[in-house]
Length: 171
Image (cartoon, rainbow, N blue to C red; front, side, top):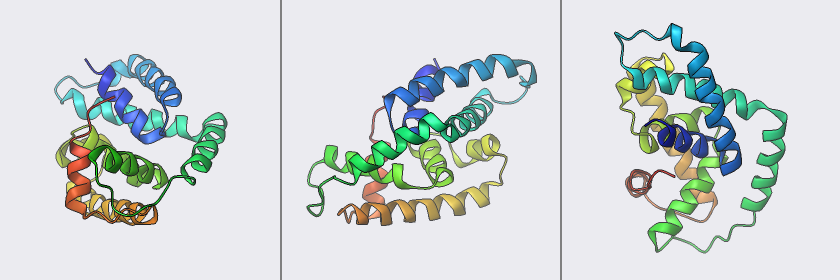
């Protein structure tokens, strides 16, 4: 039940399928190791995503992942920039590329909210931050995503970017 959403989170945060598959496996190993710490009186989803975000961040810091990220970044630098995207798939690809350029904290907030479907309250529980703080940081992260898209030659308004992220099916 949770493999798809966790894989999707890992893929969006890490940017490639191989790392996402490895990180997803690490997340579920961590869940098994930490299961005794889970409080059944609290919702499972925020706790699971908290474990996932922490494991994916740790995975992201690894040396092997760093090498792969540099290779991916060099490939993305060759992406064409011909102005506004016309097709949804093109916009979704550009959003994916721009998302990979964001700092990990911004990427985490955007992925949890738009791709994993967590509400701000659920994000607050998962990340141990106040909802108002997350709301503010999410807004700033969206603005940085829009700026990164502009750097890729895409000048879509934030509302169009949000719609493209919400309409992206899980991987």
